[in-house]
Every structure is written in structure tokens, then in C-alpha cells.
Image (cartoon, rainbow, N blue to C red; front, side, top):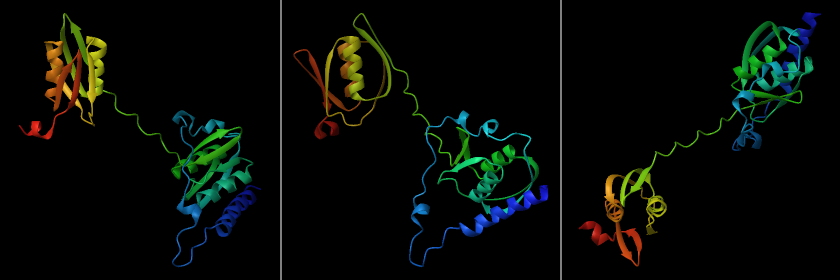
Length: 234
């Protein structure tokens, strides 16, 4: 009985491989649309939800006598196992590749888990359905901004800034020192500076002018703008 089941499983995989191959496009034509526009796998899935072998809906006591494949489409292998052992398997378009393996007396759960991982794919289990796909990890988070130190005491300011925009620096003076600052046309320039116990107004001028800006004051408002070309050359 085991030999019959094994023969059926191998035959099913062979039939899938012979009847569902992607046709070769005629000369001068590109690949089929499905191949040219392969869809990525699901996004936003937490890694701890990937590959939950204990959730595959088949008992650990159910084993596969023999699996013997060589350069076989992984989709055909998974379909054949799913049909033979009544496991609902959904294959995302991104689940592609070939696999060669020989396994004997292996539980269905372990076989599915091994085949999916060996093909560099991933799976989740939802409502009794094993969903197989190419996992696209989320992009890494942006690096944290460096710490900002800005303290005002007795009209003296001490600061330690790194890679702040002119507008961000202006906000520090406005919120912490009570000085009105307007930045005009700052562009993408970043400001880095370290000052200690300097009068607030002087610190503002030194900070901006050292980073290529000009500072002017009118009616209690400081205006910060880029230096003209003539001033920068001097």
C-alpha cells in the first residue's frame, strides 16, 4: 500500500511538470506577462508568524514513505503533496523555483516545511490554508537622529548640534530662548556646532554665519538667509 501511495505521488508530480510548464515565447518576443511582472509576496508580516510548522493542518503521525525529485518545479511538488495528503496549499505567484531531494519516512509537516525553506520561500497558515510565498522583509528603520543638547541659563546658551536643518535650529532658539527667528531659503544644508555659555544673540549669529548664512535683525526678529555669492567669495 505504501509503494502504491508513493508511486501515485511521484506520478502526480511528473504529470504536473509535463503539463503545466511555461511555454517558450516565439523568437523576437519577450517573456510571458506573468514571468515579466512577478508579484512580490505579502508584506508587513511579522517574522515570528513565518513558517509555523506546528500549525500545518496535518497530524505528525502522517508520514510520506518516499519523496524523490530532481530539478522539479517546487509548485508541482507542493501541489502533489497537498492533493495526496489533503493539505490546502495556496501558492502566491512569487513562489517559484526548482528543487531536487530524496526523503524517506518523513512526516508531511516536516516535508512541507523543509521543501518551502529549501526553495528559499516562506509560508503562513491561516484558517487551515498553507500560504506559500517569497518573503520580502521590511526595509530597515531609518537611523535615529543624533541627540540634541540645547540649554539656556541666565541668558547664556550651551548647545551641541549635529546635522540639523536651519529650520530645526531656529525652532530651538524660538522654543528655548524666546527669540523670534525666520529662516529664508535654507535649502538642504545641515548645521553642526558645539558652543558653551555664550550669549543667546551672539550664539545665534555665530552658529548660522559659521555655516554659510547671514543673519540680520529688525524689530526684534532675526532673519537668516543664504549669503550672496559675493559675500561667500570674500
